[in-house]
Image (cartoon, rainbow, N blue to C red):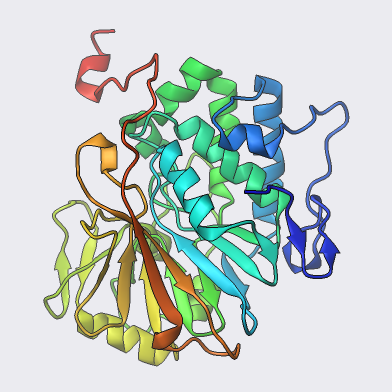
Length: 348
């Protein structure tokens, strides 16, 4: 697989940002960015390089709207990748399946939960930052509920970064997480978010676009929280989620009403393990895509990627949506560190 991102019109400058906006240039005295191929293979860059990646990624994400709009032209493809949770072999599987990102031809959308639980969260997120910086018109990232400080503290990513780098690098990555878009609208017809739908009627795409980003120290609330946390269910209506808190489950009728109100074919979301890698909600207007195959090394689930391929461009049709499933890596890479459960930390 060749990692020299390009556009149909020729080589794409790594500093070019989406929407014609200039991406952050290297700061004075900044470290050179590491080689993309080495990152994807799991080679950690220097701490200075890791912090520069996070800084450049934060500036790039901040230049984007909260609701990113992507147009997939006729004959092109957009691939939606679900949760990866620090599983580097699954990131490599996804990249082999999807191919080299090419602006206007082959677009990758990583739909949140890049980190936590898996042993290589640092390598995965730095690889994704590097891909977005190198291919800003062909690689997009949505924010998941695990791109937050509280979840990273509870599920291992903070510990991992402290072990592999330092608290300063963790803080730099948090600044990038806080700037991530919350949703992506594809061809004005398919909405992609990590979690799910709002817990109230009448929400329009304009309401999502108007969400204000919070700082790295603030947990998202309200509509942003729903987009990162909500789950579908098969029972009509809204219901409390077994996840607890203010999280809700939304039924097929809620999905249909939201899609009809916003002239959408369907929504694509992630956030939940599904044994076949993808699963449709009853009614066919919401699909879950999960890419961390054999999640945490013992779940036995397949991973999947969702492909959108409109042959004539314009609005996506149901026949333009396809899936590829894949099995988990035979064994997870060994790591010298381990996640310490929160209840044990007081004894350390």
